Length: 231
Image (cartoon, rainbow, N blue to C red):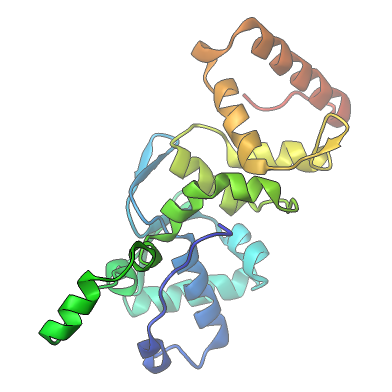
């Protein structure tokens, strides 16, 4: 997620793991990945403060080795920073005190402060808008910027927000094999490509043109890889 922000309190300086740079790196990465509101991913409800990931994806995105990722996660679990539920395909991580980290609550200490707060322009209210809402409002701005290929985690999070059934691994694998080209042109927006795939993932919505496009895609995939893409 390139847009929006998270809040980081100075009390992090007194965090028990603060002198362990890889622990800080990984935990901040978790805060950036976590859902700001509930969503659905492949039929599973992902609550606020949760996200879907895998050890290899985390290693690829952070540059921390898979073994150290495992060690850091174990330490974060030991101090109740996170909980984790794992399957043979992915892990669901929950940041236990997500609301404590991300809920910004300010109380006025005097009538003057209260009056001043009430008279603040709308811009100040927008500054407290969560990062994912800001991201959705700025989709068009994203698409006009220079294209940067997304990670599987970024595609996963976007699919959760869109509440679609697009397979992030399949999406990334396909476009990596194409050099992130659409036809002969460089992709401008992977978010737009995901939205295009949403119709493909729902057979009931496929019209004859989309069915033909799907067949062409399968044939191209077979010619390049020697086998048909997984259903």
